[in-house]
Image (tube, rainbow, N blue to C red; front, side):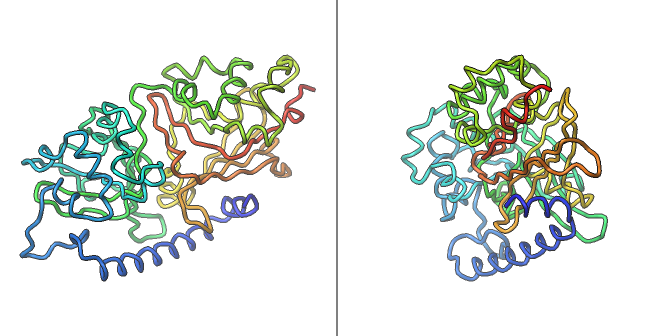
Length: 371
């Protein structure tokens, strides 16, 4: 997988070919669904069709039963069947399944107020069609019923010609666009968006024990406090198992003499400063300008990193990859390459950035010893 990712980063033409293949497969799948589905037509409304209002439409579509259950539980049904207009960003049941939600009763385990805010984030108090979104717009913001703004990116054209029309809301891809409702429009999402209202990346990490060793490392090397400021970060967060693979555990970290190690390399390698990247941004950039990667020097360090996001081959799932180099010279070979495509654990949107799950460590303690 690491070799494949490096090939993906080097050869953008291959990625475009694979993306076109995906589009062909996706179109074929849509045709099969349209041929077999007996529920409300998600793409074309017949002239004499009795078009439903938003909540009723969601209720009568089998792939949105969990989204409807959530709408009903938090009390949005009557409002969404009202005059509107509304734009519904509707995650499929498969999207909820990836979050560990399989039955309507699973919502009973969640905090009701938090659930209402998350569901409200998927509802816009306006009609927003694809053509209303700026061509090749990146992170265009629109108000939602949760009083937080959703980030919208639309890859509409590329430099080689042709229409792309890939659409993403806060990192989640739209798989069906502009579904007609009696009181607005609906876009089908392949993932549940994950807003963390008024919560910093520091607070998010502190609230997830699976990243406790990472948190301890950030604290040990004085990288922790900055994550509570208004500065923007993209955090590639290795969980405890990932760091263990690289020789770092809670016990070994506790015994480590911080003065002997380059903290900006050992743990700073996972922090991208002053940037706010969804995984999907790389996919959008690759469509707009044929380059879906972003390269940068680590802070206070000569090591060089390349981040690339998009649809990973061969799964074609949205994921991202990191390649770490000792420098930016022509003879610098990669130190480590990691890909991460666990969709449900990426794109955790916070007030000062994003947190993405990382499946493996990038630097071992031995590689970060001061010389």
